[in-house]
Length: 232
Image 1 (cartoon, rainbow, N blue to C red):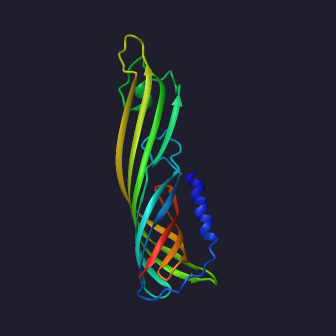
Image 2: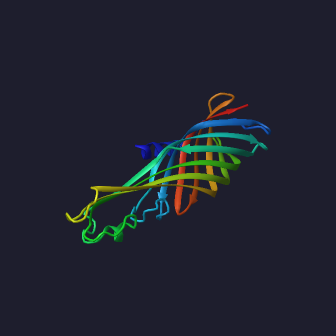
Image 3: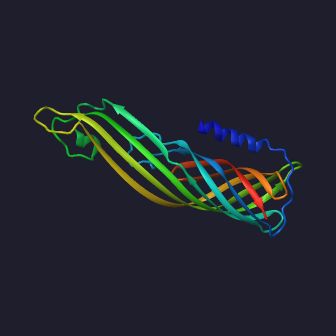
């Protein structure tokens, strides 16, 4: 459902045909809106468990921005955004019943005769971001399009859990299951590109479909969204 909403927002951004006013130098604007954080993971960096093959997904989020028109065509702005938790799971049943626990997991001691019955990997992550962007306006006949580029600072919180069920002969005492959980936080600096389409509703208010994109740790992040902008 989230992916459908994100695609609809992107399609709306490309179909805007409402006229907008030319901004003036020194004009300040603020914006608040919603976004869909679409993450495509190309490696195992999103989880400390390499057996978790795909941690890609889409999570909702919100954004808040403050900007100024340096000239009639150039803007500078700061944007802050926060995404909801993105959760991915992998479940492996009857994995290598002939191997010992320690050989498979590395998280529990090797116990002769103990066998893994089921193992489950779960990862949740949320991202807080701050972008500083410069933009350049392109005027079409019936729309104002702005191309953006700049730098961003990300704080990503990742919680990875590993749960295993196993069996053992009567001579080995083991609980029916074991669970390990780890939380890590990373900070990353990234290059950001994007685009806005400003749709004037009143003299001061505009509806702005937008998209931002960046790559970090072999993960491509595309963030389509919709904001309400107020110009002072």
